[in-house]
Image (cartoon, rainbow, N blue to C red; front, side, top):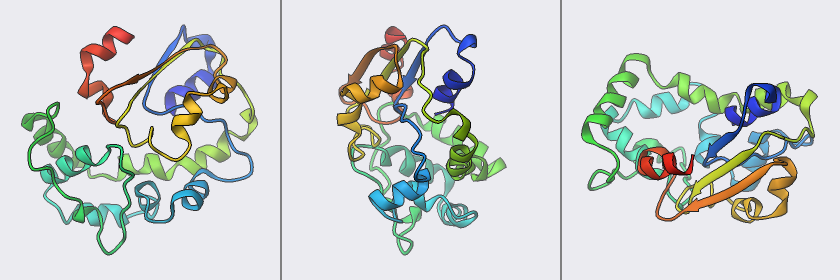
Length: 205
């Protein structure tokens, strides 16, 4: 979303954009994003569960951080992630083996950084969605005119959100991104697409 916003605010600074996983969706002036997600998927959807300050942090603290990294990395496949309060993120199943693209040393590196700084910074990205919605009101209806290419994985949680697959393969996507030159859906790839298929992504770029 930050990359799409950059195209919206400062197209003069960009020659083109290759965006991964998250399609551009035009601002709905009638409803805030989190309210829209709650209406569509309910309070237990992971994005909604991140909203209450301190709640997810407390939940994450119940799990050894390297194990939590493995749980989160494997959770963003095609099945939508719902986290009832009584289960929590601590209740997510850890994969039996590491994902093929995720090295043990990478997991431990991420865990060491989160152990130093905590998770609040990352979670605040989700908590700022409604604020961003408010701040972008002056640009409501603006179309993105930067030449763009969009790449997603067919196992990505976002690709499998209700309506998303149809949207990115329809003319509606191009109404918001006027110079959308290509939509690529890579097979066997989930949400962390640049880590899962780095060489293929570089080739597409």
